[in-house]
Amino acid sequence: MNINNILTEIEKVDPEVYERLDGRRSAMKEFMRMSGKIALAAVPFALGGMFKKAYGQTSTGIAGVLNYALTLEYLEAEFYTNGAAAPNLVPAGTPAVGAINTIRDHEKAHVEFLKKALMSLNAVAVNKPTFDFTAGGAFGNVFTNYDTFLAVAQTFEDTGVRAYKGRAGELISNNDVLTAALQIHSVEARHASHIRQMRKARGANLKPWITGNDTGGIGAAVQASYNGEEVTTQAGVNIAGFVSANAASESFDEPLTADQVLAIVKPFIKS
Amino acid sequence: MAKQAFHLQDAAPEQDTRANLMHRRKFLAGIGLGVTATAVIAACKKDKDNGNMQPPGSIDLGTGDIGILNYAYALEQLEAAFYTQVALTPYSGATAAEISLLTDIRDHEVAHREFFKTALGAKAIQKLEVNFAAIDFSKRDSVLATAKAFEDLGVSAYNGAGKLLVDANYLLLAGKIVSVEARHAALIRDLISNGTFADNTVIDANGLDLAYEPSKVLDTAKGFLKSQLWGGNLPTS
Image (cartoon, rainbow over all chains, first blue to last red):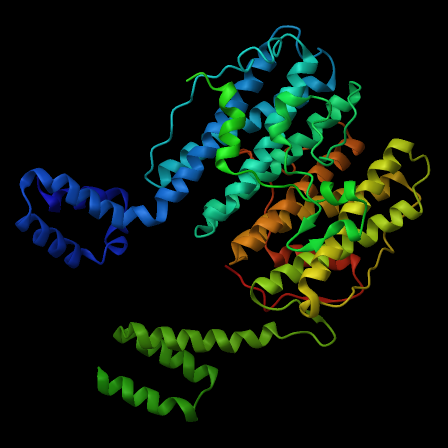
């Protein structure tokens, strides 16, 4: 194993590798010092330590968030792909066809974009899980009943908005990645708004924004996606002092933690 | 090398003209005095800042995170004033459903405005004077076109300003608001033409929404404001 060759190879794909370490000379010196002392079997660990130093602090956390986002985008992309392809699901000849195709294309673009972003950070993209959009039978007719399909779509979009929001703070050290995540986040909110209008047109009692922790008539199966949305105080300021409590809750969307989101999507993931 | 640097530094205070700086910059670049050259370029840049002086009578949004929050507060003032007028004098032919939705949006924007005003406290900028002369509040087309412009602008402004914030708590607050603005934007677009909630005038091939720098957003907003805003002290990265 020749450290010099390895570093030269890395330099080809990452010209700034030495800046990530303490410069070429000290990286070599450090490695020689370590490799002089340690057994050959431990060399990979020493190398791993170097890589962690070079990339760990800047990309591991960020890659984790991007892979989390990628998993959610895989879910949405496959959901809309299957929905758009399901016979007689989305009413033919209505604007709904265009809307579902638009959303499907955005979710597919998000998948590709996040994969590219991960690659540019020298991180490995997670594989697409195997999904069960019936959530173990709770939504058994999701691809044969249009209203069920829209209900699940609404939950995915509203959850997606809250999921991105919950982890944007972890991207604050990387301006480009943060901005891209925010740009996806608002697209999910646009989707949520439209899907809610589609449900309203079908008779559901709801608005483009979330009122309290109301699921919009979907019920207990998706309540976890809405819990916490009912807050009316922001950063110690009582918003219900300015407008009604309903408007106060509607005017701010709330974040979800990774654990909360994973619990919500777990029934939809087979493996 | 040390001698030359000493010499130049020594000469600097008495002949600090732009021509001199440029001459020195060239000279220094020629002999590869990287560090000193950088200092001279910085001096030139500082010179340039004279072109970025606050216009008399304008409102300085401020610096750092507080500057960005005041920037958001300014945009929320604009939106709240607009929808307050819309709800007060609905356009002709407005349906009950439209009035209900537009009134909701007014409440949301008022909530955002009052939130920033209260949270910023003494650091908040003053109340802005708007200029809605170009809007015909009696016409649906005029009102919804303006609403669309404001909502898409708001989304792009928050998306573009996120990276300028240092405090993650402020970032989260901005994030809580921007998705509501995006919900508004989608609805307004659908009211104008169903299905345009996220069309390719706002979403690019990567599926990403707009993100604009404050300078671009302020330039667009100024057409609707009597008060003049100045963002020359806002962070840029």
